[in-house]
Image 1 (cartoon, rainbow, N blue to C red):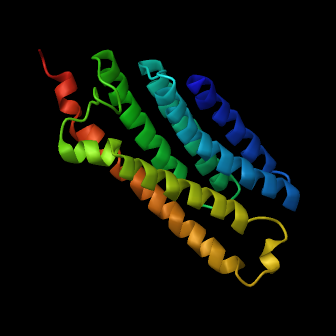
Image 2: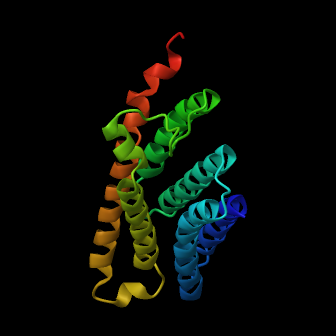
Length: 199
């Protein structure tokens, strides 16, 4: 069930971004709601895995894969639609390739991204990459950025006085989210040397 939720949320996000190409208020409202649901499901899959004792290496990989696909999809679509600079998807994808390549080597050696067998051995590395505080903060920054960007670009909303302010707040959250993205990748790179040392 947890693995199904991890995969299902990808299709929820795909439907949401598809609706952004329909220039109608109703489509954007549904896209907004679906985006919220996609990010709620990101927490639900982990809860279900723990609740029903379904935690596994496959589950960990699917969870990270889902995160990467959903996140990159939104950044790319926002750049394609001209709402954000292309630098956002470039940073997101470059960071994802870097960290996930290293994590695949770690997985082959029995390490996981999170949990007791995490590849992070330093306290600061564990805090930045795996702590609940950092993971939730990053998730909140992303969902705030994504839903605010959708809201700020919803057809018909530009007539309201708060439109420009909302757009500015949305872009601010986008920068916060992308900075989190980079910062959370640094410990993975910094601690990867041990993966390539001769035993």
